[in-house]
Each structure stands twice: as structure tokens, then as C-alpha cells.
Amino acid sequence: MLGSLPSFARLEAELGKLPGVGRKTAARLAFHLLRTSEQDVEALAAALLEMRRKVGFCQRCFHIAETALCQTCSNVNRESQRLCVVQEPQDLLAIERSHSYAGLYHVLHGALSPLDGIGPDDLKIPQLLRRLDQEPIEEIILATNFTVEGEATALYLANICRDKKIKVTRLAHGIPSGSDLEYIDAGTVQQAVAGRREF
Amino acid sequence: MLGSLPSFARLEAELGKLPGVGRKTAARLAFHLLRTSEQDVEALAAALLEMRRKVGFCQRCFHIAETALCQTCSNVNRESQRLCVVQEPQDLLAIERSHSYAGLYHVLHGALSPLDGIGPDDLKIPQLLRRLDQEPIEEIILATNFTVEGEATALYLANICRDKKIKVTRLAHGIPSGSDLEYIDAGTVQQAVAGRREF
Image 1 (cartoon, each protein chain N blue to C red):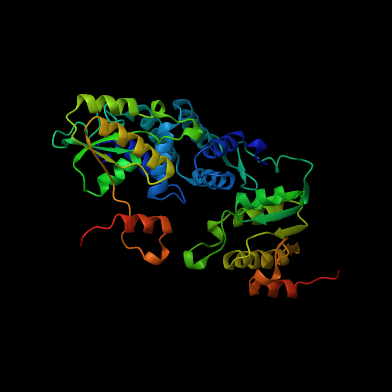
Image 2: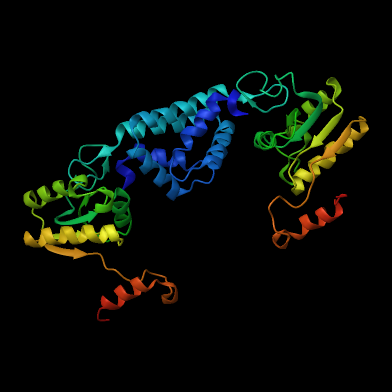
């Protein structure tokens, strides 16, 4: 039935390429856009093109940026002796939202995963090592995810940093705020017990 | 943190206007699009603009169409004495997918809902009444949804059609294929019992 509607079918196909958007969601979005004002659809299309054209990555930390250096890297008030290593720009944003850190960042754009063929050179690890040599960094905070890949990446980086005599820390691993012990997985409880501290 | 990224924030805001896309999904989609090739983002933007420019509604049945008449209305092999009334273009597509109907359609673009201030003139009902007078229609199949609004709309249209001496039918209301009686709501079971037929 959509054979006579090539432009509708094409939009459905393009929307269906987005993550988490299946055939039915793509159809729902396309029908929604059909009823949206032409002006709003143009605004969405323009926003897509503008974002893709303007946003790139910071030359220093590889966070997303519209300029050569991102907002954090170009802020002279940040503590330049501390460097927090995260997997993705989203992780950096999560830490910034917590207002708990005033140092610099380095975004790896992934985690080591030998099974998927992802080694250090597929991430921003060579660039991180250059920064460790060139910048006055005293502490590396490993904030990779608490997954197998994230832990492996943290371990890999910790070994390198120790060789360079840089202090290495890892985000605390334990029970999240507002949670009920009963529903926390055994692995997390185990980490929380092992990492308990004086109260 | 996105203060320094106006084009990224703008795309997030535009994506967040889509149905079912909240703040987090909008961010996820924007990050995905950041890593998508420029060519693919351009294809999506072009598809959006092209669809909105080309796709409109059929002059006769109000299904979506890129031409004055939709595929069904311009197909001379369809049975012009039967007219199936649906709420939305998606409903028409669902009936077409069932390959069980060869007549014409009329899309109301909604259902009567006095509480929301939606009366007959807010739907394509005046246009339907004109078709009933002008076209050689012998049977109206009411395929509005089995919701309060859909049922009210069906009742409203049935009364008009009976006055015009046109045969009125309604889609069968009962247990869906592949379902277990145990899990069917009481209202549906009640309708299925009332509407039972000889086997």
C-alpha cells in the first residue's frame, strides 16, 4: 500500500535506521511528522544537518565540541592536575551533572574488547598516553563502566599509569543511592562489602 | 555542559518533540546521529523534507497520497459499491495488509469525542455524507476502533446510513486469533458470546 508513496516509505526506512526504532515505531513517527507543520519538520531537518556539520570532537579530550577545544578543556579554572577517563561523552556529561569533579577529562570512545577486536589503538588510548607525558597530571580517575570491558580497560590503564608513577583511582563501586539491599545483585553487594569504609 | 554546544542541544530539543521520545531518548538519538556518516544524516533530513512536501491526503477518501487520488481510489478494479470507514490511515493499512477487502475506504481522521470537543464537522464526516449521496454505495463497513469514541462514531454513522437506506455492517468484535480465553478481558468475552455464530 505504500508502493504509491515512495517518499513516505523512504522516510520510514530512514527513521528505521535509528537505534531503538523498529518498523512500527518508524511508521508511528512518520505518521506523526505527516501531521506536524511543515515549519516544524523543516526545523528538525535543519537541526540534523547543522548538528552533523558543526559538532565534532575536542582535539585534546575527545569530548563533543563545536570548537577545537571543548568547554572543559578551554576552561582555565579546571584543575589541570586531575584527569578523569570515561568511555563515552555521555559518561562525561553524567559526571558533570553530579557537580562533584573540577578536573579535566579524556574520552576513550569505547572500551577494550578483544573478542570484538577492539584494542588500545582503536580507542583514544594513544592520545591519552601522550597527554600523560605532556601534561602535569598527578591523578588519573578511572571512570570506565563497571562492565567486563570497562573493568578490563581500567585495569589496562591502571598498569600503565603506575609505571608512569601517576596516582590512579577508580570510582567507588557499591550500592547506589535510594536502593534496597534486597534487590541489589550479588556482585554489587560483594563489591560493597569488600570496599566498605569507616563510618 | 551542552551550553557550549547549541547545535547539539537544538537537535536534542527537536528530537524530543517526537512522540515517545523523552529527554534521554533524544540524547541517545543525537549521540547516535553524531557518529552516523554525514551522508546518512543528509539522507534522513532529505527524506523528512521530501515526505512533508510530497505527501498529502487523497481528495476523495483522505488516505495519505502523493497524488490527488490515493492508490485505492484510483484503482478501477476496487468494488465501488462497498465503503469501509476507518479512523486513521494506519487503520486502512492494517485492513489492506489482511488482504480481506476489495472495496473503497473513507478515512475520518479521528473519532467523535464530545468531551474533547470533537464533533462530526471536525472529522471527514461531511465529506463522507457527500460521497454517500454521489457514489453508488450499497454497503458501509464501519471499521472505527472498538473504543468508546470509535463505538460512538460507528453508532452515529450507522443511524445516518440507515436513514439513507444503505446497508451498514461493523467489523466482528470478539476473541483475537492465537489468544487464550483465560487472558481476554471480560468485555471482549461478553461481545464474543453475544456475537457467537453457527459453526
